[in-house]
Structures are given as structure tokens and as C-alpha cells.
Amino acid sequence: MWEANDLIVKFNIDTGAIDPNTSQLFTSKKNNFEPRVSFAYAPGRTVFRSGFGVFVGPGQTEDQIQPIESDRVSATISNASFPVDANALVSAFMSNPNNRSYQPRAYANDYSIPEKVYQYTASVQQELPGRMAATATYVGSQGRSLFLRSVANQITQVVTNPNPANPAIVIRQFSIPVRDAAGNIVGVQNPFAEVDYKTSGGHDSYNALMLSLTRRSSSGLSLNPQYTLSRSFGNTGGSNEALTAANNACTLDQFEYDLGYNNFDARHTFNFSTLYAVPYGRGRQKSGGGLADAILGGWDVGGIVNARSGLQDPLVPRTRTATTVGPQRRTRASEWMRASYAAPVDDTCPHASQRT
Image (cartoon, rainbow, N blue to C red; front, side):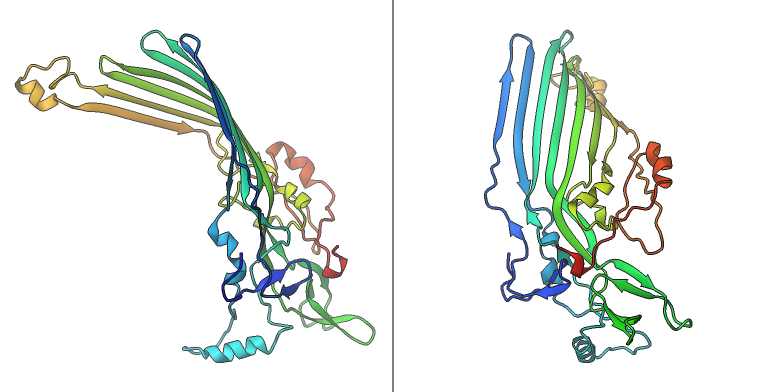
């Protein structure tokens, strides 16, 4: 994808520099194969069904235009009067490239689309007496190359300020340290602030057992209870559900710190619906005219009950030192104690000079 007039700002999260505005924004694969197959077999009053499909999608459109949205000047001012002189803001921004804390939105260099989901299902349905049918279904899916978020230009070092009256000096990945003759850091310039970036490579899985009992309309009454036992697990829920911005991962393996139950994971779900056709009215059991037909004729009465277990509450335990910044992880409560007392993990992102 390109912007028609090359009006983009493509921040390179590996080098801390702005790539040429003719750079391709991301990789879009064009060799996607999306087969769909299904099977059904009905020996007598039993029906067996199965199916498999591969589905792809680009994710959210908003996630594909980050460099285009970054083609703007962003500034924070105080003690200013309105209206603000926009030309003065732009001039100040352009004349101070090494210390303006610019905050573009970015992609990882290996970000690619589309996301891919493999779906598969198998079911058996049995006809029962009393105009009823019971169905047991397994539904599963595997998500691959899913959307992930993190932040670049993270804090890598905090240095004591040589002037005790001033706060400590915070060094980011792409900061420009100011040193004295002895090589000590005495100040810092920040061309960029913390940068939100997006990438692909996430994964999740969904597995569910679905049970249902259906009663076709008999004497005006139909019933349909359903129960689902399911589990959704992964390091992201995909485009609209990625909460990995707080992960601070630098590499795909560090996103595994966020491995856990997805936000929409509900273990138990129960639905019950019923519909009753009141037997009065034209064409019904007790159609005969009169007051009953006038008041009750043609009415159907229905009801729906939905219930589910609560959503998972991800815990985020991890001991950190003051200068260590890195991935956090979602974890089950059973892991809380040993995670809380684990030694700090050295999972900081490297400085640009250390990246490969």
C-alpha cells in the first residue's frame, strides 16, 4: 500500500529513523489459499456433518494507515492564548528536530497482512421421539498472523543528574545523550517520544463443545435449549481485541508473556428459547369464532433465557527494578505466587546500536 502523494511518515522502529516517504507501508500477501470443504452423511435417523475452511482478512482499516495519519505536526503548549499561530508551531517543530519528542505511529518492519483463521467443525444429530432432535457439535479454530501492538523507543536507562536540584535523566532507545568531556551523561535530547507500533504474528485458539435439544412445533409448542463449553486462548484476540500495547514486547517471542485467556473467553454459555402458538384463531386448534378468537386469536408467546459464566480476569504480576522495562504477562491465579517472587527478567529492548 502507498499513499497517492507520498504524504507519509514511516518511522522505523529498528533504527529510530524516518524511512523515505516512498517506502511500502507493510507487506500484503497475494498468495492466499482459502479452501472450504464439508461433508454430510445420514444413515437412517442419524446425521453426521463435518467441515473445514480457511479464512483471511485485513484486520481493521485504521490499522493499515498509521504512516498516513502520522503526517502531521503535534505540539503541546502552555500559557498560550487562543487562537494559536499555527505557522509558529510548525516552524518551532521543524527547527528543533533533535528535541521535539515527535510521536508517530508505526509498524514493525515485518508487519504483514492478512490475518488468517483455520476453522473446523464436526457434529452428530440424532432424531428422538416426541418430534425432538439432539445435536452434539465440536467447533474449533486457530488464528495465525494475528494483530499485535507494542511500543518502541522504550526507556533503557535512568541516570542520576549531576545537578542534584534537577530530576534524573531518562534515556530512551533513540535518545541523543549529551556528554561532558569525561564522557558522563549530563543531558539528553529526544527526537521521538514513546512510539505505538503494530505488527503481526499473534496466535489464538478456540475450542468448544455445543449441545442442543430441539423440539419441533407440536401442539403449538417448540423448545430449543443450548449449552456451550468453550475455551479461547492465545496471546491476542486479533484486530479489535489486541491488548498487547501494555506488553512492551520487542520481539515475537516476548509477546508470549501475554499468553492467556482472551477477553471474550466465557467458559459456560446457556441459552433457552421457547415459542407457544395460542390455539385460538383462524386455522388453529380451537378456531370457532366468538370472543376467544377475537381476543386470543393469532397470538404467539415466546421467551428467551441467556446465561453465561463470567469473563476471565487477567492478572499481571511481575517484579521490576526501577530501570527495567519489559513485557508483562497475563497469568492464571495459580501462577500468581511463583510469578510474584520470581527474579526480575532481563527483557529490555536493546538500543538501536545493539539491534540486529
